[in-house]
Image (cartoon, rainbow, N blue to C red; front, side, top):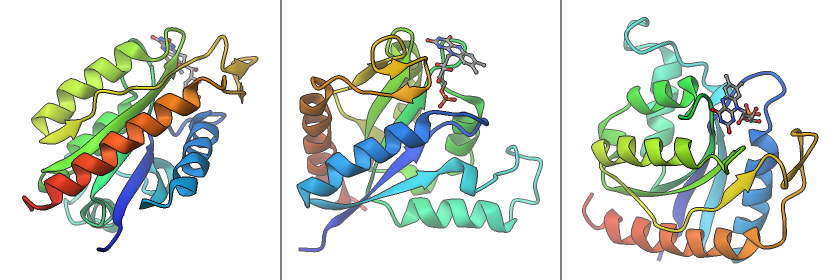
Length: 180
Ligand SMILES: Cc1cc2nc3c(=O)[nH]c(=O)nc-3n(C[C@H](O)[C@H](O)[C@H](O)COP(=O)(O)O)c2cc1C
């Protein structure tokens, strides 16, 4: 059977962001499993216009929707900004519709309280987009998993949760593929 394609979506684009460190750590763990094709999907590479401000046919938007179409499931790397997800991630979520449907997702969040508030907002949005979000949710603390809030040094204990989350993402992504 063909392997599933799972995108690890970096949900922040600001200068000095930490999401690439978190995404690369996740990809290393995921690649060792050998159970799916995992790839980093960096929102900074797409440079999407704000929804409604482009023509609707601009190459960046087509590249984004094509990328989503190629994926069976997602892992969102979600930073917490003002108790929610980042604006750039919300815009990227809003900028596609059918391409999200009947797929699965895990969330890895970070912030002062593990990004929990951002993750809970994200779950609500995913429901509307018909993305099945899995239960296991690794939460990374800016205080204990980062040095100086900028250098990622994850505690060992997260490894178990990341693998449990990926178990669920792979299982549900495979199951939902049969609906598409
Ligand atoms: C505009 C802004 C708002 C933020 N608001 C929160 C917040 O409400 N709660 C929190 O835990 N951290 C908050 N933070 C801290 C971020 O979680 C932290 O800077 C994190 O590194 C951001 O992710 P990034 O480096 O990938 O951009 C905020 C950061 C920014 C830039």
